[in-house]
Length: 270
Image 1: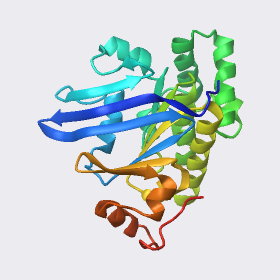
Image 2: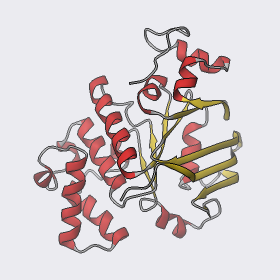
Image 3: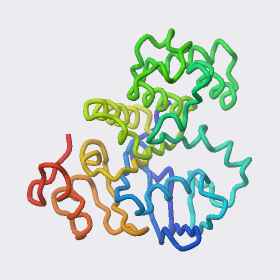
């Protein structure tokens, strides 16, 4: 299923605050729109991952959240765990830095994919298998039909991340949260994963939040970028504007740290 790009926000975050012992995220505002990739950049500890985890209610039990996270008009903050389980995977999916967080090592890829779609989409066994093959083919896993019978450890790191993306796409979610999805991969494999994210966002009208510390990754695929420092968004702009004329000193610092780049010669994207 594809959705028209742009238009009204699919996911809206307003004045989000997160406290875990002490305040860690302060007044974050973000909008995710269909077919667009919203980048969220910042160093480790900036609050970007906490922000993404808050969307799915995956923060520690000791966390306190304030503000609003709205999915197409449905307020997510305050939902019960049972209600959130119906949202996770079905309407909002997540891809983690380590695909092991999504894939069970002792269950075949096929069983994991078919169990997922049968639970959320109520498909029969044959339909679920056909859907699993289709998904693996779409994310370019070699020999998708035979791949169903294999275990995660039998694939390369890049292939495991592609399978994790297939899992995330399985139930045709409206929103995809990608938290450092390429950090553990080598440069050539990173490029393939980023290209895949760009393609599926455009094809399916998927609203994507791409969380990363690497502005080089943002230069490749993000439509818009928000930069976080110490729990606050300090700058937001389109990708072209941010890389051409960064306004905040912290953004300029992040750009200056890119290999082979300078403030005058920041990467403009692919």
